Image 1 (cartoon, helix red, strand yellow):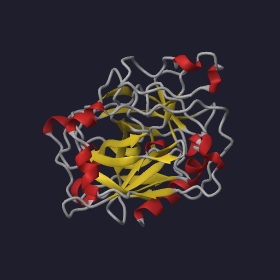
Image 2 (cartoon, rainbow, N blue to C red):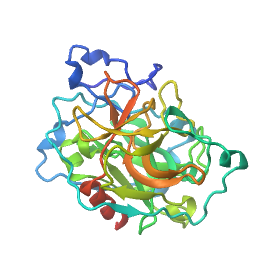
Image 3 (tube, one colour):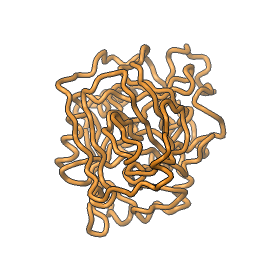
Length: 347
């Protein structure tokens, strides 16, 4: 059951019940980070015989960039997702040996003097990031068209052989069997401004499990963006590192651009703390965090350096349970996330 998005809901947190699903058992509903009141688990695309795990953009790159005016970016609303029918059938995310990829920062941002003395101490359940550093350039908002309406998520530029890879959530590239269109990444977004440009996707990808059945445990997506003004993405903003198969119960920092109250999508927001493993319906990491709709796809970092704003990305904002307020969950970066990254950076 779906309803029309009418802008950003003016309510706080992620705990408010969805009016269309109050009669469902409490443990049967999830709230997606991609929308304040969104509900997320497998949808009707599961029956596809040979699901496509990527999509190439047929639109001219300049057209996608021009489509996203400052007003359209400000007005883009979070997704409205389908209600879950049952617990995801996957019980474990395949894992192998840990793999770490170092950040690529050819032009390391200068940290303001005030920020170098500032301690963004753990834990932090949600607030504007004032520490500066590379994360203010590599993290950005993601905009796209979904079912005829404009929508937003978050994403992160990462180290990659093609210098053009963005990591985000699976539902930020594909949902309900359909790939999003007019997809662009705006690093360093601030209140309708695109200080480092609008980077249209030449190709969007997700894990096989997400594209086939929208399995919540594999809600990871990627985009390969086209060059802009003859330059490649990470040559302009740098790229964060990555960490796969790094385990649970880690100190992490989560970033994103929440667009639902009490946030408005204009600023980079962060949470930090020690993660837990979801004891309920997924194999995800959990983190105390009050980020709201629009933060989906924003990066989670381990070994994060507050002074330089660099770290190793180990997850993305994915969903929250309605009955468990102010807690965000993000997928475990196991072998399938690693394979997705390998495919994307080789595209």
